[in-house]
Image 1 (cartoon, helix red, strand yellow):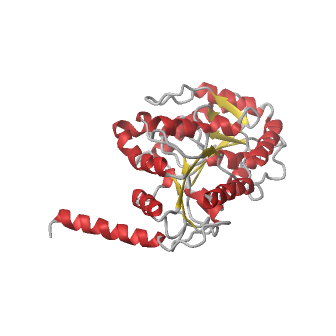
Image 2: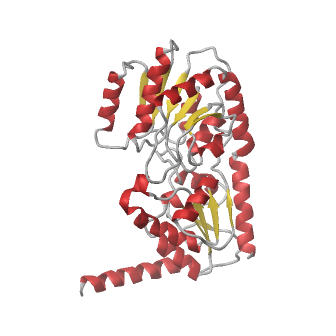
Image 3: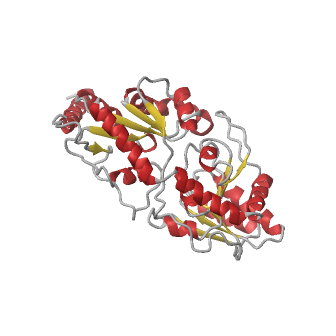
Length: 365
């Protein structure tokens, strides 16, 4: 058998298996959701990004790998067989919901950005319903994935406001401030910016330090480079690198901080920002992407940057330091405002209720 024939037969067998997953549909009002993976991770694992919202939703709609009738996919963690899954679900007249985050574009994906968008564009065009994580996400999808027909809405990433809570003295300024840079650091400028801003603030005579948490993934020498930068800025003893953290550990991490530094340029809808705000931690951030929609005027201060899909423009270090000083001058007020905004706009309970309404409308259709 030729290699081409073998490849065709294997693909045909995969299509048959996938169709059989979906073919025994029962009462459509009995919503059974499949998240594109047979087993979801748990919060004690080191998970981040799009998969976390599936854990939120699975508390009401558990993952059903056998005979589901609704496929729920998140664009930032699309499974390898996303096109096959979508096609099989549609053939079986199941419903497909896409939670759309960011897209590939030249500034960060390089010359192959079009190829990277192809699988996402396939699902985006064929989904019965699309949930855009921010207005920025919607605008980028329309530009880089193409138009679509069918219903959609903007629904920001949620936070469990009963789990992510402030420490008791969060809105008091009685201690030396602690800065936090967290998340998966795919680009070195995010860490360099935080370190340089810390050094500038300390030179102003303010006794502050930095917690750095999350994976350093911009290169094989990332951790070595981090320690060299700490030495170059004379920050030894003022920076604590904590490494990766689990979702279960996240609330305690945010409770240790007074300000979150989030310098990622054109971040579509960073969940860690709303998690920090729910813990009463205001944010100094790059005022690009979807982050300004989350933080608003009361949850922190944005550093103006150009929106550019061809070249990334990192926030100026001096402006980041000034943003930190601005929040420190009124940090009790910012802390209370950040918590109040998270409670008002990003409750996981309301987010799940909105999904329930979407699912019921699709079942009724």
